[in-house]
Length: 159
Image (cartoon, rainbow, N blue to C red; front, side, top):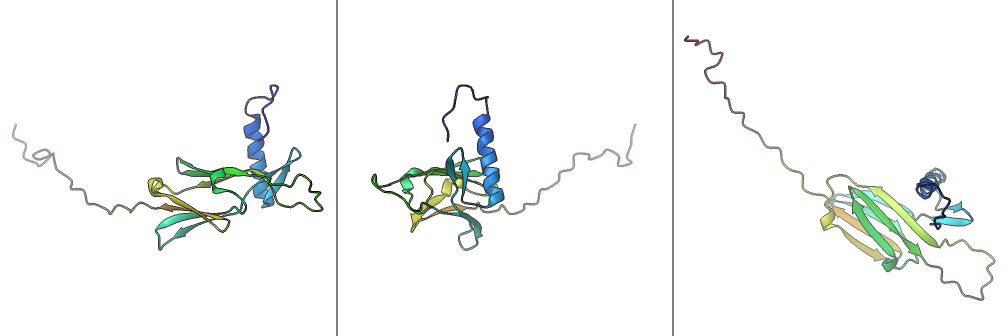
């Protein structure tokens, strides 16, 4: 994220971030130029696992220390963000450089049945797997209707 300048109008950074996300979606790319820098967006799979009765979010995060990744859930939205740090050798002269470094973020909307208190996350072989179990669905219950109009409108009008 770029540092905020004094002359920036309010909300400019948020707007720029939203525009960057839109371009990433349209290009279906993993990176997009942004003010001479590159925004990094890891690939993700989101699916329902019937054997675990859970929503699974699997992100491709090779070369990223799990300590540099943050997971947050707020109002049924999962936000995964962090940073891939550059471990360049100081004397290296690159002929080709394709690995993207820097900050990244992925946002996933979750169904309301997700039980975030039971969520778990594991990192293995460059993949972060987040398992979000679903709450058991409540069974339908018949509700008894009580009659409170006993005597009214029954044709037994004794006045």
